[in-house]
Length: 309
Ligand code: R2B
Ligand code: URA
Image (cartoon, rainbow, N blue to C red; front, side, top):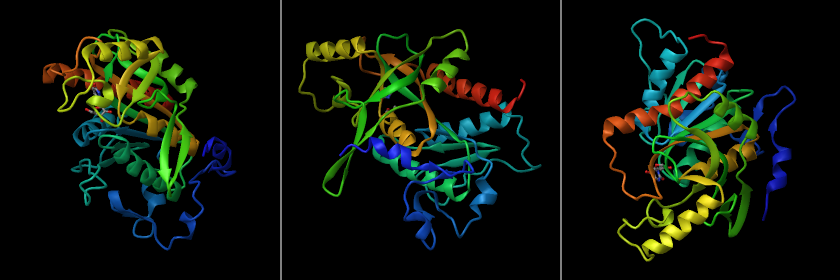
């Protein structure tokens, strides 16, 4: 079943508040966001999160902590004397959640199932907190196609492993199909403020459920394809405008679109898949590359908040 039409039904109330599309949520006695150990009756979510305007997701817990620390500096955010950043989800060890002024920094783990869980819970958190005009970003890593490693790709459209532009979710024995569209306007705005010194571009992204065979690698524990077949597939992808490969953009795009939230996927490329499969770049070089999406998003947020450097 194609649920494309649903987008018109949900999201914003007349006051511009974000509203989750699920009508059952408001009927719950308490909505406990299990994987981040936050409840809408246990906690005063409006008091804690009402001012959130930007939610930044990324795979690794430590990277999202570093991003939160970086945002403290970037936003000239004053932490109360003697206090540091605290992981709001610290009672669960599944994800981390930091708040720096209007910015949430959240880890999503690896792959669509992990991202999907935290995405549901963050949307419900924003709903309970009565947030409005929130923008989402995924700041990630990826394998590039025909790009200098360290380049940054802003996703124009996310495609699955069959190169189809939608997320398919089996629900009660039926496949639900959700288009994986992203904001063209936001992608263009981001590319227009990208720093010089490395390439930042808009391109399509293939999102797979597997890092090895699913991404046409030859170096997994299993492999039933030849080098020639791999190269033929990667070249075909490149010809279709695909510039990178990762493992979450499809769900991130589809759920943002379904929720009516403006969003962007910004991933640095760690290698050129037309040249190989193994990622063997030294750690210090990779650390510099991994900061590039963060720097771009920090610039965007600073601009929106009118913060001068
Ligand atoms: C990029 O990197 C991870 C796999 O190494 C995965 O989460 C992704 O999308
Ligand atoms: N993440 C991926 O999913 N693939 C890569 O090749 C690199 C990072």
